[in-house]
Structure formats: structure tokens, C-alpha cells
Length: 500
Image (cartoon, rainbow, N blue to C red; front, side, top):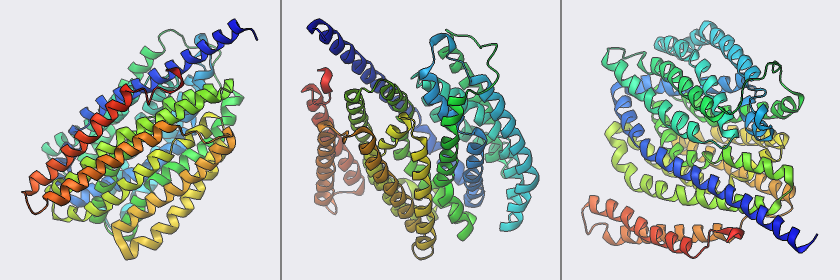
């Protein structure tokens, strides 16, 4: 290769890395904006939980936990498959396979809704001797149909690195509209079915909004007249991914169902709050999944390991930097906020701390699983999910009876830690190297300093100042420490990678 050719190759590689970084930063900005908007959600949900009471909330959150894995079953892995498939298509054929995928999942979710409402809803109501559960589950089952439509359209958009639909529709519009509708239905006197009806109506609204974003993202292409079946490569990819997704969906909600089965609806309602707060940390990392998978899919096609290493490390740094202040806020203020929902919700404080701490650790490790997905190794993802499911099932049944909600939180966090350690080893094997750069260590160091100063202020001021001063002051100290240090590191080019 001549010197000129080498320079052109380097410039091309640098341009690609720069574009990847711009896409990741754009995702962070959109996710941050969405997170600020979503601050309304926990406040509104707190009002709704207080109005409906522990039992109705417990029925709703447990029914949702049971139904969503069935929805994943009906998706047959096609939503995740499109994340891998769409980036590989030519511009004029970018809609290929989307229409037959939509027809298939709408048909499957419709059948599932009919079967659930006819057979499963009455059985569950009789099992727990909760007659109000039957009508709730029956209505909620039909919410699976618009949810499937929403997920498929959003996945297609994410395949083109368009995160707006994910952040605006799925992460913001859908959850906030659901709680707004729930409050509205309660005001209309629907105190038993309000949550269930809100689940359906908000799903329809989100499906319509996702269709609009899809039309915008794919406005440069048309539907293909010959596109009536799924191509073999896509089917081969989604079959193991389907199994992994269904298992992962059940894994994500098994704890809620087990709590409901081993205790009662009221305790399940308290645990639902634990998971809701914990997901504030967890969803930050998961918000990066689609765009990172799309990048890694392109990396696997070109074999550019420098691009993979930089993007992996940079994304991990962004995840850690985004999670830390949220965890600090939850750590400081959840003991203030939770008792407002009712005296029984004070028991959620320790489980929340446990699960959020685990999600911090798993946030730093979890992106390794995206390397497996981006490299098309859905078979490994499937195996890992089943290992995690087995570990979590064992820990749930071993720890819930003696330790209650704390045991459930530890079981969930520990099982995912096992999964992420396995994925890290597999990613090392696939790529031939550990893909963490120095920027990850630096952001971890900054975070440690921030939590150290926050803890020191707390210890010094506790007992010497009002509780409000201690809590607010500790959080402000964390921000005043980590903010300037992160800005200084950024200005010095610590996070620039090889494009600097």
C-alpha cells in the first residue's frame, strides 16, 4: 500500500470513528432529555399508586410482569432481528422484511390475547382468590397487540441509528401517558380497572406515534412489492435470538411473579416500586443497546477491531457517567420520597439500594453482551440467558423466604452479575482482546471521588445539621465534585480516543 493510500485509509477510519462517536453522543443527549421529561413519571406514578392502593397496584404490576414475556414470545425475536438486519440493507431496500414481520407479530399477539383473556385470566384469579384480577388481566392482554406494533417500528428506526422513537415514544410517551390515563380513569370512578385500561389505551397511542417516526426515518424508501416472506439469513439469526429474548423477558420479571406467588398482592405492590426505581438506573445502560448493536454489526462486517474497541470503551464510559448521578440521587432521596406512598413502602428502601448498586456494576460490564449480538452470536446470548435464569430461580427461592424483598433484590442483581462476567469472557474470546480503554478507569475514578466526598459530607454533617441540609448538601457535593472533574478530563481529551 502506498503512503497516499495509507493516509486515505486512516482518514476513512477516523471519519467512521468520528461518526460513531457523534451517534453515541447524540444518543446520550436524547436519553438525557428524555430522562428529564420522565422525571414526571415517578411523581405521577406515586400519586396513582397511592390512589389505587397496594392491592390493585400489585395486581397490575404482576399481571404486566406475566404478560410481557408472552408478548416477547409473539415477537419471535424479530424486533431484535431488525436491529441486526436493517443496517445491512441497501438504501433502496431498507424496508425489506419489515412488512411480513409486522403481519406475523400482529397475528400472533391477537391469538395470544384471545387465549389469555379466555383461559389464563380466570385461572389466575381463582388461584390467588382475587376476582378483580380476572377483568384486569383480560383487558391488559389486548394491550399486547399495540405494544408489538410499537416495538417493531421502533426497532426498525433504531436499525438506522434513529433513537428518537425509542426515547420519545417507548421511554417517555408510553409510560407517562399510561399513568396519566390511569389517573384520569380513577377520576372517572374506575378504581378497579383504571390501570388495565390505561395500559391498553397508552399502547395504542404509542403504536400510532411509533408509526409516525418510522415513516419519517424511512421516507427515502418504499415498500417492496415482492416482500412477502422472511429471508433465510434473518430467520437463522432470530431463531436463537427469539429464545434468548423470551427467556430474558421472563428473567426480567420472574422475581415479581415469584414475590406475588410466595407472598401477597400488597407485598408484590411494594416490590413493584423497588423494581420501578431500580429500572431508573438499569434503563440508562439499556438505552445504549440498539445503537451500539448497530455499530458492532457494522464492525463485524468490516473486521475493524480498533473501531470496536474505541466504541465499546467510549459507550461504557458514557453509561457509567450517566448512571452515577442518578444512583446518588436515589441513594440520598429515596428514604424521603418512598414513605409518602404509604408506611409499607418504607420497606422498599434497602432493596432499592441493593438492586441499584448491582445495576451500577452491571452497567460497566453489560455492554459485553452487545458484542455477542453485534457479531451475530445469538446462540451464546441464548445460552447465557438460560444460565442466568437458573441462577436467579435458585437464589429467589433460597433467599425470599428468609430475607423477603432484600433477598429478592440480591438474587436479581447477583444473577445478572454472573451473566455479565460470562459475557465479558466470551467477548474477550470473540475479539481477541479486552476492550476497555483508559477512559473507563478515569470515569470510575471520578465517580469514586464523588461518592467519597458525598459520604464524607454526610458523616461530618449528620447530627450537626437538619436532615434536609444533610441530604441536599450531600447530593450537591457529589455534583460539584464529579461535574468539574469530568469537564476537565473532557477538555484534556481523555475521552477523545484515537480520533484526537
